[in-house]
Structures are given as structure tokens and as C-alpha cells.
Length: 524
Image (cartoon, rainbow, N blue to C red; front, top):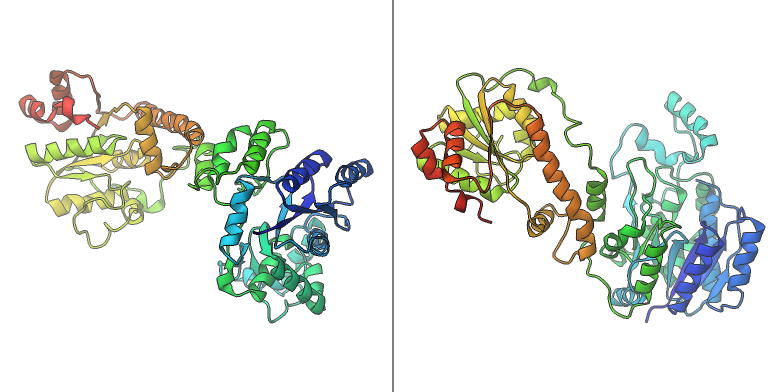
């Protein structure tokens, strides 16, 4: 059975640090605690007094930790040495700060470590991740870009075009990744032995090392990849965390419990100190005997979706090659706009069978849309969306028609705007469909926001936002002021629905009546 020694770095304060150390040791694990020398003497004394009688907790030699400096790595090394010396029974070392909390039961982490004899550390080759020019020689910079007082030297070197510092050790390829890791005891011992025998690596790292990422995200990532066979490394951080658009770590609050517990990983970084309810629930989960919730993942996508609302329709603009008409007069384009794609496809099928009009279903939303051979431009959404009018002109020509029914999603407001300015005669039909909770759940799963194993609490976060987004899209469509915009919705009498379709498609009323069977059109 795996025995874990946590390397716990104190940053939040004595209460958070002591609470987490006690929680981890109560679960049967060990803690090597590093207290920043910058902490207030009263806080340091409180931590020492609180853990003094706990044989599962040891205090590491303290250093003053400065942002972007070697001292932060030194704190990790000191904690690792203390853990190895004090806890010979420890099989794995897991790096944490007191801003982290478990998101899985302790038994689940031990079972995962027992199942595979490997190290868990994200280790990516930052030179192979892209970048040329200045980035090609940035790894040999000795200045650390995280330290503001060193940036002037880098700027001066960039101006001269010469590398600003010592080259890295020739036998090491710089790697980077998440700073959070869980390593086997033998791996940590090998890293410490390597550093003890390689003063050149220590000098290079202390001088700044690879500045593409903080030192805490490069040293272990580089040395583990150098010392351990690749098939014994799982290049994925065992601690879940997110980074916001401003580059700062995302802080999690009380309503994030369901989001966190279904993510891959065993801990989450940056739990708010004031999120008492979340902390209590996660601590109870850590002590639970079962495996905990099933993993569904998607944390980054869900977070971007929930925080990205309010920007829809505000980043679109004409590109230089989209100015001017491509469809031109003489083409009639009927846009059927519907969020439930099955309903729009049902209408398109009836139109084809009844009046023989060609119909194209969601070409700007569905990568697998059924399209004629257009010489390759039909392959992929990116090519079709490069110039909406030019693409549809090819579709018109391929079908040999001047009348076309096009199915669109209500979110395609930019497409509708482009087509109205492209010279063709455009008429629009909004097919308004009600969305039940089951409909929203299926839509969220189709978007990849939820899965079959997502807990109800996570759905309770996502579904209201998704429902509001659908309502907002419909409101923006009606507020856009498009001419010849008709609306078809459930509950209309057959005669009313037939009249709407007759105007939209410009066909006789009796013909439209054969299409407008709303009793079956809106079937789920």
C-alpha cells in the first residue's frame, strides 16, 4: 500500500496550513511542512506549536521565498530532504501548498499509486511546443523573467540580438509543465543525488535557468524526464488547476464542488480561504471510504463557458476578403433558424419532397454536413466559414438553382449579417422550440459540457446558463432588425403555420399547408 509524504508549502497562513496538515495526517499520510521565513514570527510559532505533538508531521528547514527566485525551489528541496530523512516508510512524495485541497478520497489516490509504478508529473518540451527567433535561444537566458529587476537585462539583450547569458548544460533538454507533481521516493532521491553531483546544473538553475516558465515549473520537470524512462512517467499533473485569461490562477468557491470532484486529479489548487462550505465538503470527501464521483473532466471548457457569457456577437467584424458581394442578385436564400437541429432537418426534408427545393443543413455548424463536391472547399468548417457568400455561391451553382433553403443555428448571427449584405434576396424563418430540462441536458452533453456521469450539482450550474444563452440568442435575432423575418412556433393552428410558410417560401398556401403539420414538426 502506498504511503504518501506530502511536501506542504505554507503560504495562506497558520490556520489553513495546520488544518490541511492535520487532515492529511489523520488520513494516514505524512507531511513535511515548509514555513516561509517571511511569515510573521507569531504565525510561525503558532504552526510549530500546533504540529509539535504530531509524529506524522515534520518541519523542514525554512528559507525566505521570493517570487520567481531559486528560493521557492529550495523550499521544495528542503521539504523533500526532510520527508526522506524522517519518513523511511514513505513511498511517494506529493507537492502541495496550503491553497490546495483534496477532490478525491484518500483511498482512491493510494489505489491509483498502487496500480501503476510510475511518476505523475507534467513534463513538456517547451522548445518543441513552438516559437522561433528570440524564443529559439531564450532557454540560455540566465535572467528570470518573473523577477522585475532582471527584465532590463533581457530587454537589452533582445535589442542587441545576442543571447544574454550562460548556455544550459548540454546533456539536458529543458522541460516545463505544471508545478504540481507526485513522484516515487526513488525518483526524488535520484533528483537530489543528481543535483549533488552536478554543480553546473545548480549554478545554471540558481542563475535563473530556463525562463520560459517559473523555476518551480522547470527543474523537476527537466530532471525527472532526464532520469526516468519515458514509459514510467505520466505527463499529467495530479493536481487540478485553471488559469484565467489574465494569466492568474482561478480561485474556486463554494459553488464549485461538483465541478472539482469530477475532474482528473486528486487535489485542486487555489481554494478560496473564505469558501468554508467547499472546504468542509472536500475534507469530508477525502475521508470517505468509497472511490468518490466518476471522472467526466472538461473543467477548462466548463469554466470558459460559464465565465465567457456576455461577449456573444461582440467580436465579429468584416475581414478584408469578405468585403463585396459574392451571391449577387438573382439568388433567393431562405434561412431556417432553429436551435433544435432535428426540427430544422425535418422541415428541410419536407421542403425537398414537396417542392423540390435544395436544402443545406447547418453547413457552418456541423462538420459532417451533407454537401455536394465543391472541389475541397466543403471539407471542414474553417474552409466554409472563410467567406460565407462565396461558399454558398458554389452550392447554388452545384445544384443549378437560384433558390436554396439553408439551416442555421441562432448563434450564427454573423453568418446572417454577412448574407444580408451579399446581394442575394434573403428571407428568414425563426423556428422557436421550447427547451425542457431534459432538452438542455442533452444539449449540454452534445456540447461536451456535461457527460453521463456528471453529478446533478454540476448540471445545476451549467443548465441555467445554457438556457439563458438560448433565450439571449433568440432575443438578439429579433433585435437585429432583419427584414422578412418570420416565426414558427408550437401551438400555431395549421392554417396560421401554413400562412407563415407560404410567405417564407413564396409558395401557394395549399402547398405550404402540406408542409406545415406542426403536430409532428416539433416532435422530439
